[in-house]
Image (cartoon, rainbow, N blue to C red):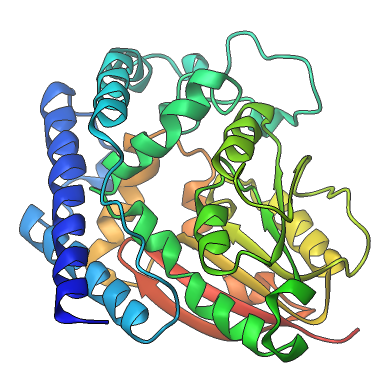
Length: 347
């Protein structure tokens, strides 16, 4: 890596933050405050300066990982201007509907006309007030832009941090030959994380599992240029795979959207489908106590956005949740998220 490489990376990320954080501020200005319950009122939350400083620290961490050779620079900054503007107009056009749900009755948070299919009741909701929940083409097309706005341009960089334990897992088995290993991404969504995986290990066999056919359609399109890819529709708590089929299982931003009992079923399935000695890698939200200055913001998140199971996730002991079967290996923060890896123990 040269000084020019670093300068290019910094310029791209600065442009990215300017684009998405600016939309975040504008969306906040266009939105009415949501009343907080008494237990959350008056608690101190980080100001804009602190949040931007922590976002800058995330990109500094990102660059150190690139310099260390954990993964290649992402490149691209933001997408081409025409596509970026189209997604921005769509985001703001949907904002009025989101606002109506934020201030409406609780019944408005459920899907109005659930489509037929193998969908459990907990899934048939408008998570974070997403129009149509996860069950429409419009939702799938809009999702990644919404998440980047929510995190001020830091979402992709947070996901990339999972590539650090992934590289270690790949190098630690089969002589480091990615072509001999198989990875499952649980709740792969639109395939953004898998795109970063394939950009770094193009010969790795990957499988993306998701319950939404609409999000899987975007994922297939996103990874259409790569070989050794497979996408499967199914529930994380009842995976259609053989015992020990995978060497590595990844899961990005799923656990905070699951009811507690379903989390346990998902862990049991992960334990079943990853081989002994294999690796489980999670990326999800910070929890209470991980960064005390953020605790009040985290506690208010499920009120400000429709996240019905987030409050229970905030106090979930993830290491205890993984027992028996998974031994903790590595963990570190990544802005509003954290990365955890576990080794699958022998039965």
